[in-house]
Length: 438
Image: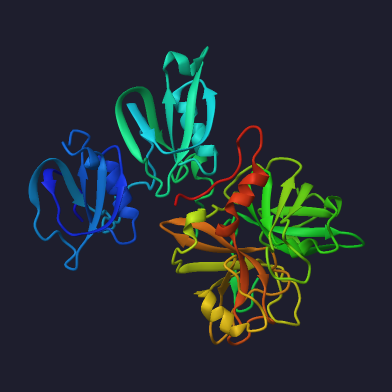
């Protein structure tokens, strides 16, 4: 573990990425959470080459160390802290940089009182990655000044300009404590071949229950915002009236539900416009709740992946639900969980020659079968932990039977629908969903 940042020194190695950062400490955090970065070199704002000011070069090498560190003015270098088990930095940047303007694609502009409120606003907006707060006279209206919410392809500012009457900083969404972290739930999914879950292990999981003649669990779903649940469109085939649905969160045992158990009523069901009954595509729907949820350790949202994460190689993935544990089974009382590997779409297509596996789908399962989602798990989450953050990668959609050999489960690929979700969930307060950084 090497915690020092070395002044006036450049490390040599193979560049794996290049990002913009306001200081070497942010550069080091980015390196620590990058999957292949072992060490870095950061060029300060005083560096004489305009194209390299505030640039953070993420590097690696076969030996794991720099081949030839060289003295260089206005350069700073250091190592990933991945081996420092007790000293990993938070994967977020809480510092506000006065006199600095972060450049990027402008997501939205609002007027707020104070730079801290601007940062809070950015944290609440799902796609906002960083912000700039201007106190120029022409950018202020009374006590409130211009707060520009921004984003970029890699989550870092595209430019950093000094000497401006502005202050800049990052969203606090990836911080492990505080309101900005509600979707970064800790934890290590209905399920054939699964095991019992514990209370609070999957706090985004909800039970979608319908009350017609009787009251019963029908589908799963995932909390993605205070008033929003994401699930599968096919759960509402023939059951599209909001009044008949009840949403239960923060539970593990269905038998715990009594007449006194609180539940959420449904204000609106939004089914993807391209979804068609009896077809497997676009199997995604949003539920807007009548009242906002209170977040607790047992009930809080899962992060949405970035739409740029469509090719991320997820390895630690789980499915959860109360569904059948065999094809001709029954709903389970205890929420089940199972660890399950993703399958490439090419391999999945070979197993489903009579169906089209599209880019809007993701498959998961073991070649030998034995572990899978089943009836009653529909609409529930396929979640994967990546860079310390749980992401909602898929929505349980369909498959040939349950846990059959060489018949993986097929899930709606959430990353392909992020823009649709944002469009439908945006409200006047801008208080929408939680999303992990790209």
